[in-house]
Image (cartoon, rainbow, N blue to C red):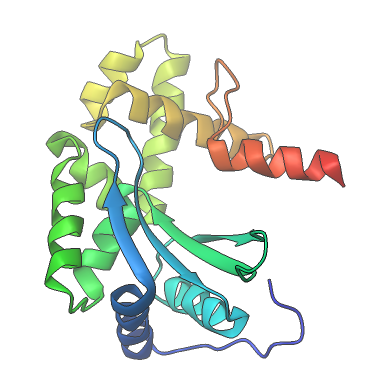
Amino acid sequence: MFPGRTPWRPTTREAAHYLAAMIDGEGCVWSRPGHSLRQIQICNTDPDLIAATLACCAALDIHAYVLERNPPPPRKRNWAVYITGRRGLARVAEVVPIQSGAKRAALAVILASYVRRDSDFYTMSHQEARRRGDEALRLRGEGLTWRAIGEKLGCHESTACVAAGKAARRADGGAEGSCPETGAQPIRSQRAARMEQRR
């Protein structure tokens, strides 16, 4: 991500406390009413701090991605780390000791906004999530509807569809994330494809 910098490999304890400090000092925990966007955003102009934040997320098994932003002067070039999705947000709530009461409350509201019956599916390990995706793909091949598959897996039908899409893409040796029937890509994949076309 940042060439020439020695990667930091923090312990789990170091990672949890450093990430808490970044969220408390530089982060924003927010969601948009009536919109599916729910996230933690951490912005800074120092690439070393951003690299360290990503290292902490990796050490804690929290999926995060970063976007570089180049606003017009006099604003400085900066980077934003995003933590999205129930699994990642729930992991932050579980292991990161955020000190800001307002941000802890905002995170609790976000997690409570997810459909309750999906909670196990989104907070399970990546290995178990993959197993569920493979199972969803198998059941779809047997002719079950997405609703029926969702009921068997204990999740919403759209969740089953996305999980099966990831399994299908893994089986084909491609990138994860598309729907097996529509081929629709997630927003981040669409953005990456557009950036690749511009090069």
